[in-house]
Length: 239
Image (tube, rainbow, N blue to C red; front, side, top):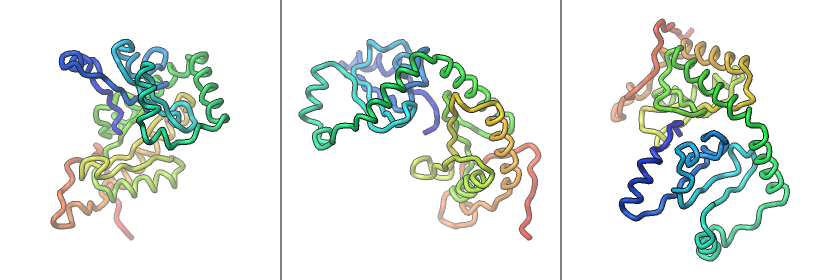
């Protein structure tokens, strides 16, 4: 949710210490992390140390469905013991073909990963420069800390009206009082696209910076722990 990366190197050491197996859910890592976009295990140089990798076709591969990768014994076990697999129909040929083509493009057009990370660095720096808190994100997923749930919904609605699509994440997906607007960026976003997003976010932050926070007004609810702030906030009065 927050764009941070697990400490897989430390997890692998613990697994070895306690004779455990390591499974990585790489839904957001495939096509993003690692020199060749192979995911979290490649990012840490631990591809030979991870026992099971689970992923989805619905993120960087732009399709639907998913996969489990492991040794032959594991795959055979899942075929006969995993209820969700037993009662699931095979993927349509068009879906499989699309995934295979996406993997081919990913391997051949390596500039996409380089561009993705250039865009990522630009947005990290841009949001921080405006004054937003983006947490510990290290990836193209950039959470913008808003505070109250109500403010997060208003913010995303205003973003949509300005031509930017982003989604709010509220409790219990995040801690209460720490609602975020969750953004994510692609290699195909141009500098003009990204500059426009930053401009609109700053404009709305100033417009909604003094939005009355219901978490403070409604007794019995925990007050917001965080809220964004700008160096020169503009007060907006209802008329």
